[in-house]
Length: 307
Image (cartoon, one colour):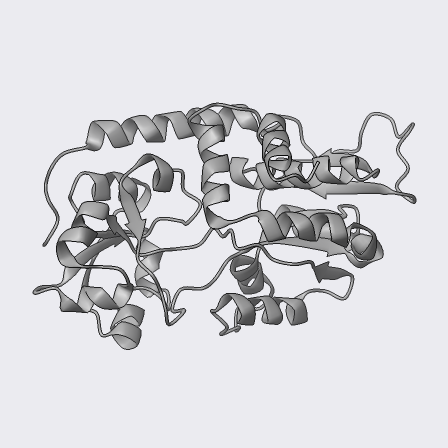
């Protein structure tokens, strides 16, 4: 194995601890699917846009960006954040009770159509539009994504001339890749890397400790999601995937068709501005800087001239 066995576990553990605190502190605690105690002043038939989010700090930040931008554009916005997983919120989105929801193209496509084979950002987006229920539409997707990567230490990449997944085939012996156990069976797991890039890999089921294992030099390659704050706080780099082996999962606004036309200009401007580095930086502000989602959203919108 090529990993440098220099221990950095303590540093990695600190990052994980801070992230854990942020996950507890940034979300709302009440059940967002419960009806409000009063409907006075809430006009669901007019310009009121109900914005939802997952129970995940990164998703809530994007939802708050949508909400503040819409308010700035003159809409009345109701927030239903911290809902949970797709099985909990998708029925609400499909029914129109939630008007707008930040989603991820590849992950949502898999949820709606587990037989889909598209992997590139453009193809996944097109397939998602076809798979969505008639009541919903996908507005423009962002460059920002939250998807699997083949990530290595920057020092390991520099030492071995690695820029893409294909370059792993040039190593003198197979690298070890760490990930959750199910990664081994995914189309973009070790077997996929062999088929697409001719890369031989040894698999290690590192689970939640994958990033720690990479930083500690216990593995050579790690499955780290593109929006992970570690891409800003640690010396790691995601290898390029020129063949689009990995399922693209770009941030995409899913809207009820009855409001999509009205809000598209405002929301599409956000997607046009939200880059991959932006999403990582937003997540760092949440997990490391301990800023609130509203403050993070406001700053980003102001910095990008959107409010």
